[in-house]
Structure formats: C-alpha cells, structure tokens
Image 1 (tube, rainbow, N blue to C red):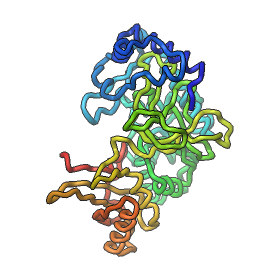
Image 2: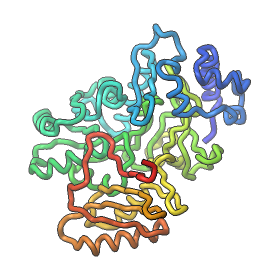
Image 3: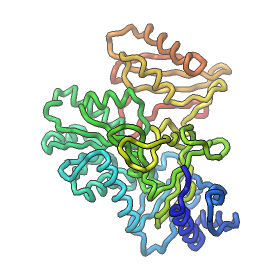
Image 4: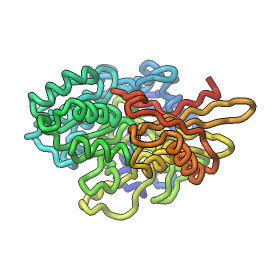
Length: 411
C-alpha cells in the first residue's frame, strides 16, 4: 500500500487544520517541527496518535473546528479509564452515512430490505451508525437497540426483518433462541451484518447455519467515525476499507515500522476528510494484514483480513505470546464443541497456569474431550493448559461484546 498524491494533499489539509486548532495532535506536530508532507517518506515521519492521547484530551480537546459546527458527540465505551469523546460536524455525520450505505450495498442490501438493528444507541456509535446508513440507502430501519430478546424475536417475525445487524455474541444468542423456540420457519432473515468484536470461524459457521443467512463482517471504531469504514463483499476475501475517506497502514506493533502487504501487524488509520476530530496515524491495536492482489468483485478499495485480535489482547504466558485466535482455531477442529470459550490465566505456587473452559453437548465424555483439547492446544502454542469441559449454554452469552480472556495475574 502506498499513499497517493491525492491522499497526501488531503493529509496536508488536515495538518493545517490541526495546527490551527492547536489541539493535542496540532501541538505534537508543532513540537516535531512539521508543517506539511510532500512525500511518502515525510508521511512516515509523522508521529502516531494513541488512545491515551485521546483520553488526555477529555472532554473536548480533540475538536479541530469551531464549536458552532459541531452537531453531535460520540464516546468510546470507556470500559477502562477516562472515556474518549469524539465531536462530529454535519459533514462527518453525512460522510459516515455514505460509507455505511456503501457497506450495505457491498453486502447486496437494497432499499427493499427491512434492517433489524440490535446494537446500542446513545453515546455508542453503533446503533445510530447502522441506522444512518440504512436511511441513506432508503431501506426500512427497525431500530430495536439491545436486549429484550422476546420483543426482538416478535418484531423480527411480525415485520419480516430481512437483515440482522448485531454483535456476533448477540447474533449467536438470537440463533440459539430461535432454535430453542422452534420458530425458524417464521423468521425471514437473509443477511447478517456483524461487527464490533472479533469472532472465530466456528462461531461464524454456527450463526450462518442456524439462521440460514449470508454473513458480512463490518469494521470500524468510535475514534474513526464508528462501524462502517469497511466490509467484506460476497466473495468473502477480506474487508474492503474505504480509502477515499481513510488511509490504512499496517505496522509492526513493537517497532512501529510498516510491514509488507500480506504480513500481520497493527492497523493504523488516518482520517483524510474528517472535520470534527481528524486523527493522523492512529494506532488502533487491532491486528490484521493487508491482502495483496485484486478482489474478484473488481473493487479497487484495499482489503484487510479478519481481525485476529488486539495487540493488547495478546497474553504472554511461560514466555509465549498467545492470541485468542489460536485457541479458536483449535476449538474449530472439534465438531462436538460449541464456539464459546473462556481463557483464565492465573499465577499459582510461583508459576503461571492457563485454564480453558469449553462447551459441548452431552454426547461426549467430558474428561476424554478435555484431554484431546489440551493436547491440541499444546501442539499449537507449546504448553499444556488445564481444560474444563462444560455443558452447552453454561458460558455467558452477551448482548454486547463477550469477554473471553481473563488475566487474573494482575487483579
């Protein structure tokens, strides 16, 4: 991936605006003596921005425009420490809507669809993002928001919703409920647009098969508009990122250097036209890779692979870097296991231990199953975890993002 002349011009415009606004990044640029970029080499010298910078700017220190132009704020979930507040101008809201509309179009969704929106509204970017794109497309929005599964299913049946927008955890919960209640013949869903958390191949297959729908992965984060900055097409060859709005880089999280296309690393994003709170070289901590070559759909928008995890999700245990994705890949080898799991890491008697909880139906010997899984995990990551097999449905299902890794060493 190389930055184009057009993108460099857009970055220059952003730099001027940030310096003029004298916000946190404007100050950073001044300190570094940077007033513009004229080449890719210049661009790569620009300092990164991080989530901590955004927290330090709380509440409205990110604003890069006159306050009278701000029409809305959104905030990250703020599960850890100070929340991040992102101000939006009307143009930002409209641009986000256009990107989201394009996501729906890439998924083959039209103005004849009825779009059932379950992600949260309010300060969170999800619900309103799905809705804004839906209205721009001219489809019918069913703005449910999260929770109240009885009502969700009732509306889904009565309104004959054709598209489900949800986190993967909630899509799975709905699929399980539909099966439990025996109402699959009354559900008219054709497609699912799933975002906001990483999900393994096994979970994808379960949702796809149990709901009988096509699935589309949507990408985004509150700091960079919200969900809708990229989606996969029907060929399922990675997520296209809208590079007319966002410039994409993949770096080595340790060194900060760009890695070649095809290699895994951390996603870094630059907003090319955002007004309210432009970000340059923002480190997302999401791990993926740029997929080289062209997509069979013919789109020239660059593609990234599934999100393999977060650089801050990675746990180091017994000197080994472990990503949740590796555990998911092992679980996918066992048809008897569900897609749900939890990893608990603790420190006992001077050494680290990893416990993995997995779910299975009642037809297998739990002890035998635990041994098999432990062996497979050992061959994948190099040490043996303690595996505990529990019955299907024992691990919690979530309407939001599921927490799967619990590192109890630091609690």
